[in-house]
Length: 112
Length: 109
Picture 1 (cartoon, rainbow over the protein chains, first blue to last red):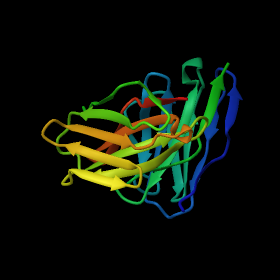
Picture 2: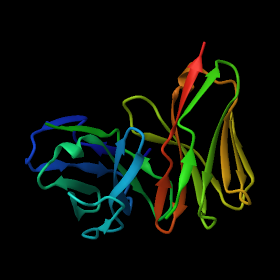
Picture 3: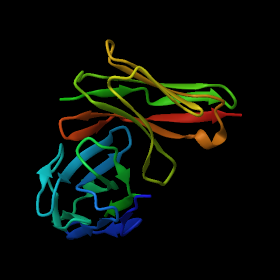
Picture 4: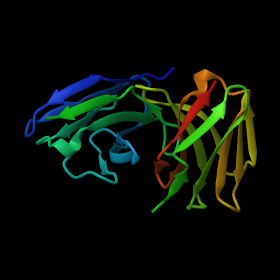
């Protein structure tokens, strides 16, 4: 089974802090994704990557950046956290484009 | 852009069938998915259907696709308490997968 691991289950940060959310997958998947999930808004795509060192903006990239230095690892970075970035963050991976996504368990981030 | 619409809540009695409906706008979607999210967890792929199929059955799950009406449904037979979750409809578009807002399925005793 594919395993997508997110480094933290819960995270509490202060406004203005730099935040790193880490995601690792163990099945040599090409594609990796970061979503945020908010009540009433469903899942919204922040950034995605189809290859090492490659990144594409999703629907809501503002206030975020990403890093993919190795194929198995995709990091989401909040350069200066703000309270409106309090959310559940979900990482996912897929073998190829449009293939089914495998999700991590999520990181619930609270920015105070 | 792609719109994927689904109702937000559904209540069903234990043992009855649950039917969760979804509509989408992009007729070129190749794959259509149903994901399940249990409390405090990530999303888990339940089933998917290819756009040239009308129906797919997998044990208690039946997926129906009406391409003309751009309507996808998930039927869960003999609904159990363990089926209580949020169910997301999702469709492929270009190189991305677009999700609906999710339907929260509540099981009544």
